[in-house]
Length: 405
Ligand code: LLP
Image (tube, rainbow, N blue to C red; front, side, top):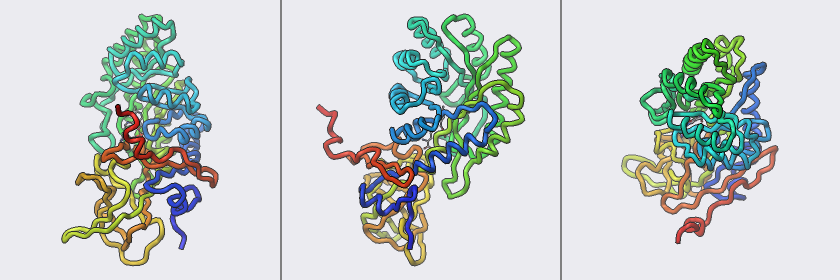
């Protein structure tokens, strides 16, 4: 019987060669998803700015940079990674409510496409830094259009109840104020209304809000270079298709018809999520009077999403197993009740050493990992055109104490 593979390479072989737990990414699928996304918007001036936070692994970032993607970064660390991976600075946007003056200076020196400014204070800081460096402070204002979207309260970002962006009225004020500075260059408006969004309606609503503001600014003589609708495009964690970029393009088409602005989108999960699989081996089975536990060698430190958001990832045996499926909790070795990868997964009878695959783990998997319980981070491999290459070595016990004095 054929087992599961990643990018055409048998998962069992990957696990034998690189050990478990292991993050394995399908580079061909990453490329295919980026081009499907772009194809959906063919004929429009679209810049896809990959949200690096979803998966900042160098091998993943380099692959997307080589394909000509742009990048959305949220820290000096991400900025450094993005530029090292080869993203052109003119295709990088810098988001986040807490950019420090140092981070802003670093971005200005490199000549980024735009800072997505999230407060009046940040705009003042940008102006000061741009004046000092005598560099143009290119920025977009991040607006909270009051659109509610997304899968979970922790990842809902489109309203004034969250720390992100500014409300429409303040956005206009910031745009107007910026005209008074020789060092600020307003390039556009941005919003990001949430994450794991499966419907196109929230994007249509967000676009409408941005176009309303753009209209007000145009009447005052201010033209925008770009409109950025952020990321958030959802995927089918249950095996379903997720948000279809062609449907998204179709939903936005009426609003965008005849508009001269360039469109920016910042997908993270949609590009990287389905391309990643977390491979983990069964350590042992354990039954209580109430539940069956499958204890595996990956834990919440490796994949936090189930514990943090009650996210449901499909967990499947890599080699098909005969026998009736029965509900089981797939749990890790971490000393927390929340340490589970799946609850009530329907799994066949398994044994120690069996290999399981946690699907759709390419986004916010490794990137949200930690060493909690002094667990070295797993190895990561990229499979591209039929070849698997180690992209990040498995951490060792020495790595756990490397920075301690
Ligand atoms: N742009 C901005 C400004 C963002 O804040 C985010 C995500 C993105 C783009 C990319 O969103 P995506 O396309 O990946 O949904 N850790 C959570 C997701 C947090 C998303 C934070 N911001 C999770 O595991 O579901």
